[in-house]
Length: 115
Length: 112
Image 1 (cartoon, each protein chain N blue to C red):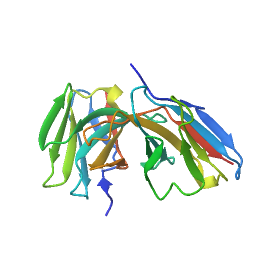
Image 2 (tube, helix red, strand yellow):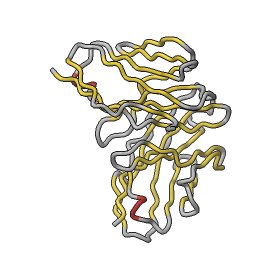
Image 3 (cartoon, each protein chain N blue to C red):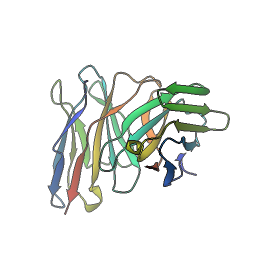
Image 4 (cartoon, helix red, strand yellow):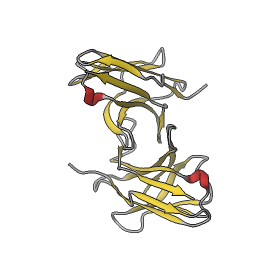
């Protein structure tokens, strides 16, 4: 069964550094998403991406964050000048289309720890 | 008012019983509703979705939607210890707004 994959599973970085989180969405999916979950809190939407453009972003997704689809398979989230409060699980998700009936499938997540 | 509300639990049920999980949402324009299961330290795993008023059954799971009351629920029949997890309710507005808005989740504990 196709699945979303993410690397690395755990990333540790120093405050102020840049990190890149990588995702490989399900191959026939066209819509891609990043969510985050701070420990003990709810899952929060960061950004959605379609046709090489951001479709929607939340207020969390400030100018330190960027997304890119550098090739036909990878989807990346870059965080510049990391802060302690960026420490969270970051989940990539993908879906076939954007109909309200369509479902998003989540990857296993990357745990980001900012020291 | 929170966009999606769930009781945090824990909801404790004996093995074999029916577990009932509830969720309310604030945006009347919401069009589709999803239940995800999340084990500790893992990612959300889709259980089922519903977008029409009424009941939708899938195996041991039944989702119920009442848009007038802005209420969605998940029933788990014949609960098993392996069902012990946090159940996340998520809502999508639709109309080009694809983001899922999650509740904080209800922790379910099924004891033998």
